[in-house]
Image (tube, rainbow, N blue to C red; front, side, top):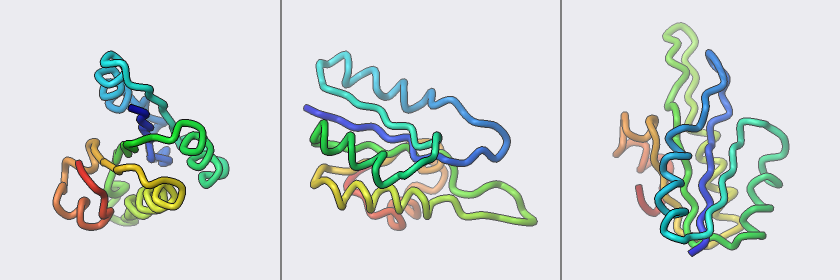
Length: 123
């Protein structure tokens, strides 16, 4: 099975985080013989092209999106961080009929609310 895992985080609030959780999740399907591709959106650039190209090349049956944070954790100037994730998911849906799953620390904090907001197929 072809799988694409996407780190949707583009925030550098305190520091640029390593994508350890997503990489740990990637080990199991890779060890099971699945064709796995990782995409980290942290580098910026044209997200439409960054998402479209690996989808067109690998034709994944499942796209997993990692949700790192729900907000910037700054009470005076709170910023909602799920809208860019929602945009990433919309781009995935535009280029693929794959099942879309989410996970990650941001999802785990408010699972039902995040699931409703992002409208993905599974978690």
